Each structure stands twice: as structure tokens, then as C-alpha cells.
Amino acid sequence: MSKKHIVVGLSGGVDSAVTALLLKQQGYEVTGLFMKNWEDDDNSEYCSSRQDLIDAVSVADTIGIPIEAVNFAKEYKDRVFSYFLREYEAGRTPNPDILCNSEIKFKAFLDHAIRLGADAIATGHYAQVRESDDGFQLLKAQDDSKDQSYFLHRLSQQQLSKAMFPLGQILKSKVREIAREHGLSNHAKKDSTGICFIGERPFREFLNQYLPTKPGNMLTPEGKVVGRHMGLSFYTLGQRQGLGIGGSRDTNGEPWFVAGKDMKQNHLIVVQGHGHPLLLAHQLDALEMHWISGHAPDFNRNFAAKTRYRQVDARCNISSTSPELTHFDFIDAQWAVTPGQSVVAYDGEVCLGGGIIK
Image (cartoon, rainbow, N blue to C red; front, side, top):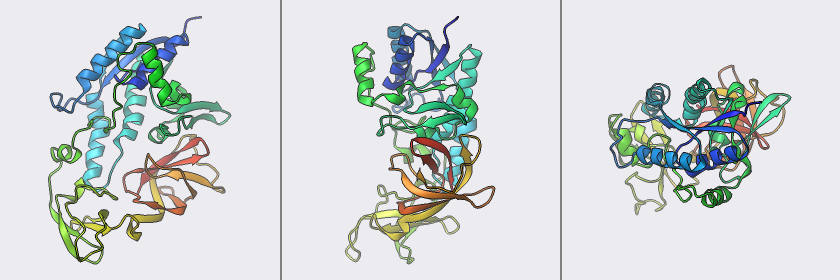
């Protein structure tokens, strides 16, 4: 019987490198695939794709697997980046990494891998897949501090049935150790923390290339003008840095935070203090709710959810208020719930799915 053929998304980073190594050790036939998703400013100091490809080729050579490079820049622009810009223009804060997973890594990439004769694809994500009576489940990773199920919550049954996450049961520290022991050249390479295509460049400067500035007033909830903004697209709820207003003498001296946007009047609403009531919310509505199982769970019990990636699960009740809206009611108030971001629901270690915060 021929070996199962797994195509691994090799990004040039240590996580995907160790993913490929582990699968090779487990006896699979492994092919590496390097994805190029962005080419608008290849020559800029922030674009690391050339170095990433060199690192990916070096890793494939060390492990002893073939590697191919594939360009998904057009698909990325059509399916992810255009949505990203539309959302920012509307004053919301999208999460392109989530769309990148569902539209590029587990759609364009998966389709390409199947054309190459793959039985499944694997990535360096920290998550787990389990087959149950109810189909395929997405589970949190063993390493709680690295769990990436939040970013994978829009995957379908078909996509999960073809996905492998070998790092799901391994601690990040162990991953670097494995890479070092096996002489992988990128064992000490820094993790990338930027948005999937932008890298770690100054974000406002990047956005400014695509969206016009439209300055207006920064106001307190009482209507007092305290500063000027460069355009509502360039700010997000809960933002503290880059507002250009310090605590003044006639106020309490506490830092300012973005608490809202008035799109009609072009006003940015700002408040003082991390615990200001306008930054706290007990409930939210979600649009485009995607349930991984293919159907909504029984709502007559307690769930947990998170409204941003690096957040402890918060206990909540979930209900369906209409075919378009899913309602989340949190036991404890949540900080800076941001329209355009994703709310993701959990039942213990099982990621149930999520939607876009309205």
C-alpha cells in the first residue's frame, strides 16, 4: 500500500518546518509548498518573502523533501485584501488572518495540493482535529499560550477532513528544541507577529497607501473637542497609542482610549481610563455565524467565547435572535468589543465556530 501523501505549507518559519519534519519521521510522503500571497511592495524593507523562501528551501533540503513555490497573490487580493479594505473604510476592524485561513490556506492551497495528488494538507498551526460521531471537531492546542483555534474557526467539515496539525499536542519550547536537534537552519528564527501579508511594518503608514485620510475631531462623550484624528479608518476600539492627546491638567490625567466612531459626523469618540463604562459590554450580536459542525449547538447550556485572540475564554449564553444574528450574553463585561473582529465560541476544548461582531 502506498504511503499517504501530505503537502505541508512551508512558510520559512520554525513551526511549519517542524511540522514537515515530524510527518516525514512518521513515514508519510511529504511535499513542501511555499505560498506567496503578497507582491505589491516586494522591495520594501518590511517584506520578508524572499528570505522566507530561502529559509523554506533550506529546511526542505535538510529534511530531504521536495518543495514547490506557488503564487496566490491574485486570489489573496480578490478574496482577502479587498474585503479588508472595505471593512476599514466602513470604520470596522477586520481580521484578515481568519479569512486568509478559510480562503487561501484551506481553499486555494488545499485545491492546489489535491491537484498535486495530496491525501491531506498540514500546517504549523497550534490546534487539533478530532473525528467524532458528529463529524470533525476543531480542538484547542495543548499549549494554551499558543492555541490558534480562534483563527481557524471558519473552517468547514470538508476542510477539516483534509487538515493535519502535528503541533497541536506539542509545547512551543519543544518545537524549537526539535528544530535545533535536527539542524534546521531556522530553529532560532523569530516568530512573525504581523498580519499575514503586511508583516511587521508601521500599520497606519501601510493603510495610508490604500485609504485616503479624512481628518476630523476627537470628542469626549460629552462633546468636548480634545484633539484631531487623521481618518476614522485608521483607529480601532480600545486603541491607546497614536492618539496624540496626553492626560491634561483639567482632567484626571489618565490615558485616553478610542471608545467609538460617529461615521456620519466623522467624529472619533475618546474616553479616559481603561475601565471607562463605554469600553465595557455585556453583550454583542454576531453576523455570518459559522458553526464548524454544520449546525448550531443546543443553546440551552453555558458556553465560553472570546472576542479577541489573546483573551481568556469568557463564560456566556448564546441565542439566535434571527436567521442573520446570533446573540452573545457574557456573565462578565468584555473590554473593547470591536465591530469587524470575530467572536469565537467554545465548549470546553472544542471550538464550535464564530461570527463577525456587528
